Image (tube, rainbow, N blue to C red; front, side):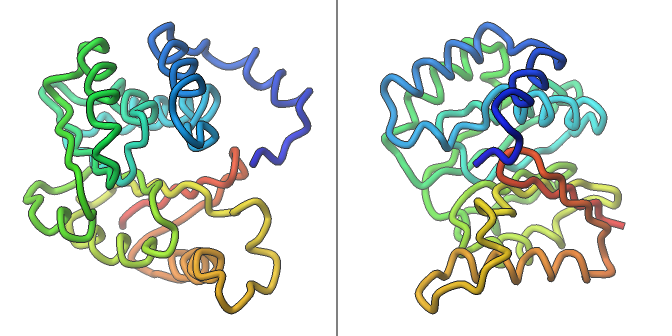
Length: 213
């Protein structure tokens, strides 16, 4: 969900860095061939991810939730020399689609794909993490956060997507709405966690930027 009126969305995109040609192609093909294309980060959020990555210049990046690899490539734009990205997705059917674009981008050798349950894969990653992007199953956000925080470098950044959840975080969630319940708890938890500092940005469906002290 986007919270800005469509006219302002257009204005923002026109006054931000242009979407790279390869990402335009990935965007189009995702909408043509892949289910739930709204899951793709898109032009403006993608440029925001790219900018943050370039500011940080991370050596080790973890992405939880690859989808078709759009955000992965945005994050790759800021990698330090010889930097790497580990990206995890549960859907093995998207593996070849992702790999095609990773190789076309020139970042292919720096991106390692993992297929499976992130809660099982993350413990096996030994690198200290400079940048993490969480954009996967919402009911596991707290579990992901608790699992990755000890692996973060001092000053490392955790980005979390969909934290406004189409405005549902303002409502009293139904008993069976575990995703909304978790997001409400997650937003409160990271805001109160004294080990980090967090700002919630109203970008697209909500993006938190959390810095490890």
